[in-house]
Image (cartoon, rainbow, N blue to C red; front, top):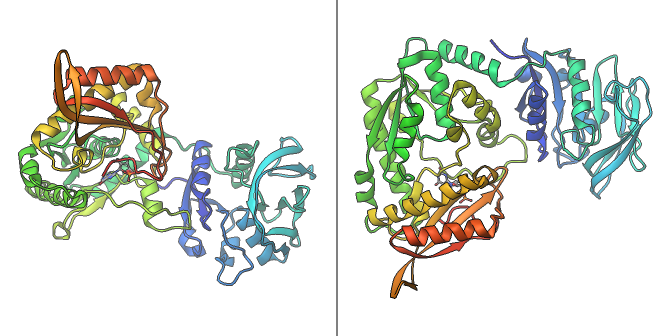
Length: 509
Ligand code: XMP
């Protein structure tokens, strides 16, 4: 049931994830492994090739990550990129030039080998993206030098008999003009079918869930976000009503959130328990102002409520919408791991002893979206912005009261409605309103007002680790401000946040 795959050994380059992305765009299933992986860990009937990623170390320094020589005997083609190239050169008898200086940026290579497999069908002069210190000075025996640059004598080398290929530059970075074509040439050498796409992923995942779950019962926390929604539909397709979803309305969700999610799932025969726990959550938030305490209370209450419902199901399995980036990140593979994943309210007590079902574990977000669309999840659910587990509580600095939640929900709904109407919702990665606990003077009609400030935040971001503020047009902002002040009682002033992350965070708390 396993898809033919390419193993990517991650030596810590910030681009490793991109290699996996590119392969998948080309129809090949790439999976990332740790730098010291043994041949036995990546071997398998479904293995078709190995890629050694770039990395920030020098292969000549002590303690540098190495390569299990048995990987070269697995009988599949190997492609070394940057650090990966130097590893191959070092271990196979080439010579490496050590440099303390990093070269970074675009370079021009000239391809000088008509027989080259990597450059088959491509121009002889190409722009590539380099980011390296050391470089290979002399290729190992058995290799032909297939490309060079002015400063790098071995920009690419190939041993076509043993199917070992290596390049100094990064084909996965979009600045490399023929990067995809080079990767595709390598994939052809690997001889795998280029048939990875959302459609056949579904059938494979469905079969895998059936095999894992058998006749067991599965419980899933449905938040209405993309990940849990797609996981729910996929598992439902596999085991039907053996799946029970629990939707907990924390009272801290967006305006009419539960109704919206109910509507989206109405066409499916899903078993969902809709739990209205708002009053329980809000009662426990009374008087609490510290952001971390708020998060803890909400997290603990969520687990309590979820546990209460889930234990009625007598499930053997707990389903989660874990995605591949979370897996790469939490397994601490390579050096591209950034500090962060402080969130997720989803952790459950060990006492539940449930086995995990995670059908999206090796999918990227865009793949999950495609699966969702194919399974019939409505577009506006598929393209939803992420929403934090603690919900509006982290968008109400200070004490969270039912009244403040109501005001914020109304303001947020107007902002989102205007963003959608203008096309800016899809152009932003995340957008929302925040209710500041600051009152200022205003004037409405003939009367002075003394009410709260609403801040609007809209950001663009690749991975939410860094973000820039979305350049919303002034007339759109003006419309939002006018409508919010006129339609939402309790707000008399609207601000737009133009801070990037870092130094600010996306949320206000
Ligand atoms: P920050 O504010 O850290 O947010 O820049 C980055 C991303 O994480 C989301 N976020 C959270 N998600 N629980 C969550 O499930 C949380 O406590 C939490 N705090 C922030 C935030 O919405 C953004 O997408």
